[in-house]
Length: 79
Image 1: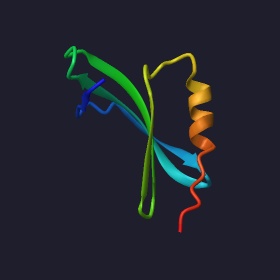
Image 2: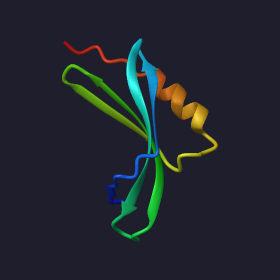
Image 3: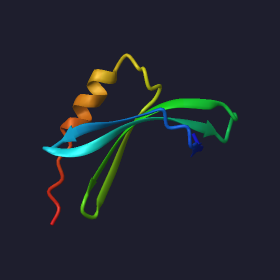
Image 4: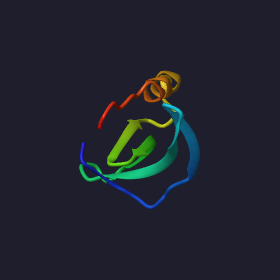
């Protein structure tokens, strides 16, 4: 699916990954295939030169707890 991130950020909160701050962001994406607006939850992590984004769609998925646990378990052992 191709999509374009809109400017409709509705929630931004702190989320912890590996003892560091990440951001939980709820926003809209406009699908370029169907022009439908999709409600997405993302967790964004930035550590020096690393940027990681974990995306959950739909934002209220029944697997939200598993999604958050997966994002929390992320480890980066870069140099």
